[in-house]
Amino acid sequence: MNVGAKLKAWAKRIKRDGVTLWFAGKHPLTPWFAKALGLFVVAYALSPIDLIPDFIPVLGYLDDVILLPVLIWLTVKLLPPEVLAECRIKADEWMQMEGAKPRSRFGAVLIVALWLAAGAALWFWIEPHM
Image 1 (cartoon, rainbow, N blue to C red):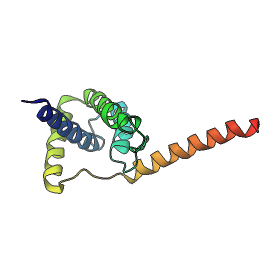
Image 2 (cartoon, rainbow, N blue to C red):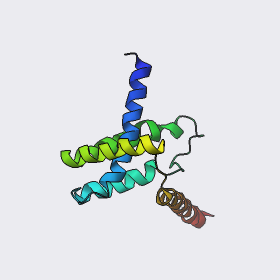
Image 3 (cartoon, one colour):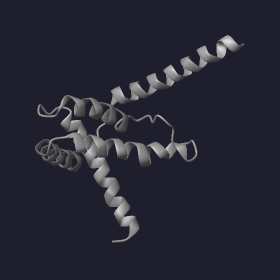
């Protein structure tokens, strides 16, 4: 298997596990700490808006290539094996039926709120110096 095929298979697994976390968040046997981290990860992963916009050279893709896969991996490791197996099956079925990942309006609102908070913090930091 060549490097391109390995990367493509890895990306597909990450995408599937992102949807898996969406289902795990609703599962009653998922521990609260996995649900909390999973909620954040899913909101960010499914948000149509990135924390670091993709048009920023290098940094724009850093969150997509490093941050998001690490957070998904960590959250998946926190899930009980039976919950993980059940939710992966549901995720595979969802992706076959829908052909795409779901979207999260909450995630988009969360990212916009973070940018607004950062802008407000910067404003209050700069304002006294003027």
